[in-house]
Image 1 (cartoon, protein in one colour):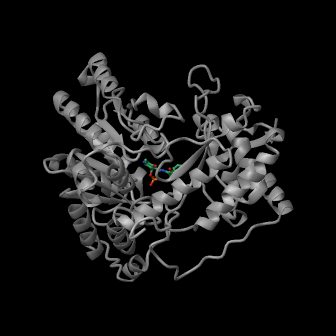
Image 2 (cartoon, rainbow, N blue to C red; image 1 turned 90 degrees about the horizontal axis):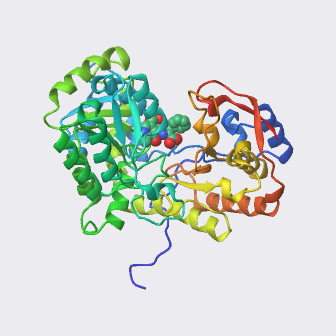
Amino acid sequence: MGESNWPQAEPYRIKVVEPIRRLSRSEREQALDRAGLNPFLLKSDEVFIDLLTDSGTGAMSDNQWAGMMVGDESYAGSRNYYNLEKAVRDIFGYPFFLPTHQGRGAENVLFPLLIEKNKYVPGNMHFDTTKAHIEMAGGRGVNLVRQEAYDLNSEYPFKGDMDIEALVNFIEEKGKEQISFILMTITCNSGGGQPVSLGNMQKVREIANKYALPLFLDAARFSENAYFVKKREQGQAEKSIGEIIREFFCLADGCTISAKKDGLVNIGGLLAFAEGQEELFQQARERLVPLEGFVTYGGLAGRDMEAMARGLYEVQEEAYLAQRVGQVERLGKKLIAAGVPIQKPVGGHAVFVDGKTWLSHIPQEQFPSQALSIELYLESGVRAVEVGTILAGRHPETGENIMPDLDLLRLTVPRRTYTDNHMDFVVEAFRRLDARREKIKGVRFAYEPKILRHFTARFARA
Ligand code: P71
């Protein structure tokens, strides 16, 4: 066996623990009733294993916590700002950067500078808050991801790739002056945490050059994406994670990053620009002050910037990435073995369960994946999040519910937070649900908010 084929042990040991408690079945029933059958409205103390999101929910290292103690809380010119600037330069190769309070802060500063009214922002697939910021700036987001992304059973290794032909056709059809910029999301969150290949990014760059369009990265999970490239893309295996990251960022004009994911911090974000983008950077700098805060803190404490500077390095360690991505994949494989249909291949940060197929007796109008999230919590105390018909909302003109092809339940795994035993507990919850699967009932709205309804809606059993 030699040096290979060892079981995947966490490349860290645990120094601090946070107790979690599972409520009794009757306490869980009461809690969920109070929450209007919407797990989003549960108190976190009512949740045993929380797979709502991987955003800001990870564990920091001892080195990051040590960094918190050397936070320099000066209003201007904090030393931690300079440490973060150095990290951004080193890792992404970008000379211009601004800290922001989180990813959407960076979007809010940047997008109005690039978007003109009614113009388009094509991308592989925009994340919800990103699409909202494009629209708030007057633009129109368009998803042009490859068709394989919509086929849960396709094992295509880069389901986050842009459909290059569709992108060219779109630009030709609308005219390049109708396009504000191109945005590539790595990994593609809304498409299931699926990676973008370096080859695809290079082609998108060629098109951006041909039509003289700016190209940006929404790079919340930049390191997980690089890991997939190293493992899956031909000719990339010998490169380091750092080299792959550099190559990706070299191909873009700048990036917005929610550091709550691969920054390994609980809060923070950044906006950075490549060589040659000084003018845009200056404009962004001016907007940062009223929107986020002075240019050397952007809504963050000095200690937050230090933790981020250190996290951005740690997240590139290959042993960390192998265990991180491996843990999510292992959860997916065990669910498949338990007969639960999921999206394949398993994405970098979450397993997406095909609720519509697993609960095929529930019509889509009765929100099968929401029903599944309710039953999963009742059965086990595990919280997951619907990414389906409730999230999709209503058609702006007809007012009808949009019926997306995919109606999924996202089991999102926080970084360095839960062990494989926790994941086995989740699998066991699905096994127990399977025994009474056909009796699970759909739900209807008891209260439906007008916008972003999934956060605060209340439900009743149909
Ligand atoms: C996720 C989130 C966080 C989230 C957002 C809304 C509701 C629930 C949870 C945030 C992203 C993201 C990408 C690709 C920008 C943001 C915004 N994702 N781009 O998946 O995934 O970043 O939250 O720091 O503002 O749970 P921000």
